[in-house]
Image (cartoon, rainbow, N blue to C red; front, side, top):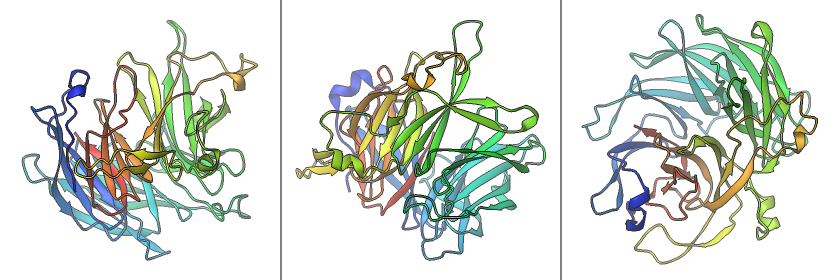
Length: 429
């Protein structure tokens, strides 16, 4: 166990982070609550406050609702190919020891791995859950009590396996709400599809729209939207950046909305880029094993957008300073990659005959993730800290992010290990 690292040189460029909670799930079934603080002596401290059980045996994803102080935990339940569970918790008063009060849990289809929470028009919420074993489920939520009820279930099939060994069947891996809050987006790693659903804001029922196909063998895992403005008096564009796990690429798309809530269209725009960026010194053999996990949108202080991607199973960094200040043994590490995006839209896709030659996503930097298999990471709402969950290293590491440049520090400001295989983490600001 180690909790803090002194970085006096960073004080001048790092904004104060005070008493910030961090919730971490692990595949041992635990949810661990941490308190992350900056001390007066120019060090950061990561203190474990509480360990909560009750999310099953294989906690895979955390969904937080800060407004109503609710936390939902998905249990992937590796022991079963049929059933898993979802549990809800109330976040106790901030002055307490960081414990969570369990509200309820429910048996659900197997392998829930990701979720999104939608605020309906009538004060209720919709929790949408992607199940790696071929399904999407939705639940109506009472945000005051954190109780939830199954609403809809969609089972997916394929007429034949996909072209890659990882694609024997549909594998929905994420749920994203679009910027208009009208649609759910579900990247399906097994089917090479991005599934689209319209959300009725009153009934909270969802309706299937035509799916988006991506190149065979891509394995779409996660994605993010970005509303890209243009110059004054010009309408901006909606872009979607799709992260593929199998081909290890970022695929940029321009998004248009069909009339009558009929769905979305995705038009490729700009060059696809490797999820680890680029670099003449990168070992191609190591790069070939890359399995990117998470993609997030971030902003610089001047409003310029940026992408951050976590890369697994490609240990480009072989001699990294141990995050434990008492251990001088170097470690190997997977990576975090940063990319810059244009601040203004490049122009209409239809008007640009060379849209696929446009460079929208530009590699910026590749830095150590603090260990192996960064399955999940979370950007602090202030934008100046990145918390990384390292599944194989059973560690979390928190890095400083410069809000002026978007660069992430090469060494963590705080870390904690011995948590079991970390699966997800969320800031409780």
